Image (cartoon, rainbow, N blue to C red; front, side):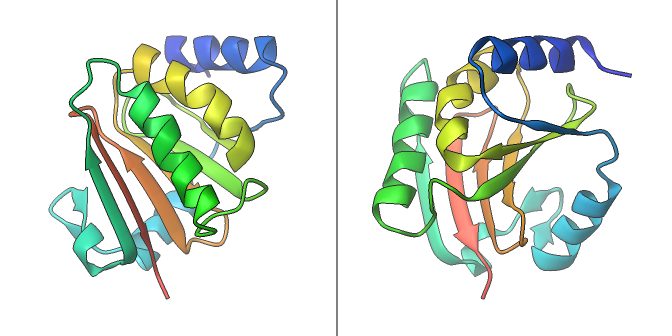
Length: 144
């Protein structure tokens, strides 16, 4: 069953005509997230990942910095705009969602402004992750 936040996310994605897939059972992704990425307590340990990038947004609206952060990953060829990305929230959304990274640029402002939770964007091959925290921190890291 969808939460309120899942419903508003789906509505926004459909209004923007973004291709997406709903992932109602996240256990496969959560299990592999834990298998491929180290955690310190409940947080990802980005310091042990390759290509670690970090931004602390000082803006009230983090969406501008988040979009620019992702664009820079594409420009630096660390990620491709055609990469399939799995979106996982940490509390308010029940489902996961699969987007292409290029479409993620369109929906990130909605996610960070309308859904107050930590946001994880995991590459489908479990080698890269983008994290946007509720505390306006944006991080990226990869595994070899």
